[in-house]
Image (cartoon, rainbow, N blue to C red):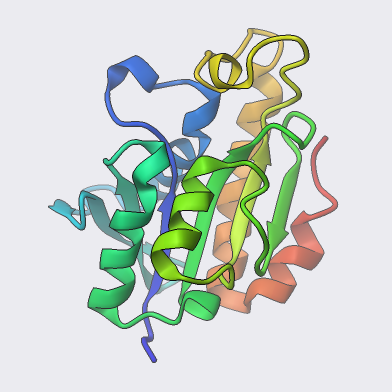
Length: 192
């Protein structure tokens, strides 16, 4: 069993996708990295990997660069390399259109819920048994779901999502220091 914790933020690489709803996982990792200025970032596991400190604990942040729907390859490589137990050492952060804007939902396991990045991770790891932190990006309504998640935030949505990004970084810190149960108890009632 590893003593490492790996936090994976899902998103799509490149400037075209920056600031889109689908990239909230990347946005949370960017905020976590700001807490460790100068942390080296390396190209590893088909992604960008940074080692940061969260409450005096070393944590690896992984941003797969494979595009959302193929995120599992990157995650599998990291899990195998560090001999991680996905149920205790891995946290995946992604967007969720079934949650109200800004609502956080932390679960220890489960289906992909239609999130294709999660679907690929489940397929690559061969298990649904890994924690995930979903961030609500709101209901697309009549808009095609793919177009909606690849769209940018409306001005009216920005303050809500900014607050939820702060709460998401706090949720990660609680997961790292106190465990999944504590993070679920504190943050599943927050937002939306």
